[in-house]
Length: 73
Image 1 (cartoon, helix red, strand yellow):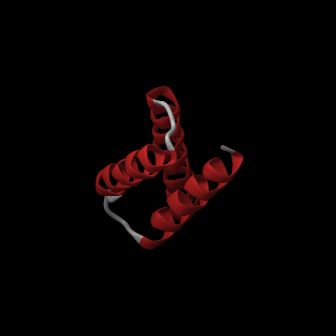
Image 2 (cartoon, one colour):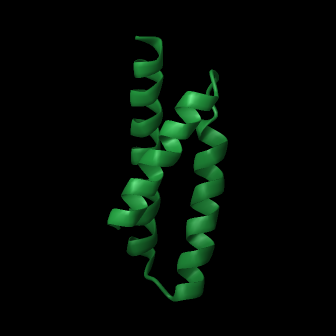
Image 3 (cartoon, helix red, strand yellow):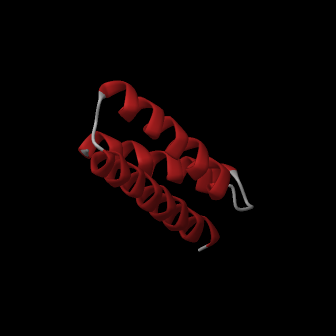
């Protein structure tokens, strides 16, 4: 989970630097679909899958927001 958190924050930071418009909804949907497929293949429970998706989406948004604010400051 720590690796997921770090990677999600870094991806959000990269998106915040690169794009000026909101690209998070498509990235979150694509990431959620990928996590669901990978979790299903690994045999994870539904709660583990949901927790991974929530962590991914939350930290992606946090990284995007922090980087966008730093960029405009």
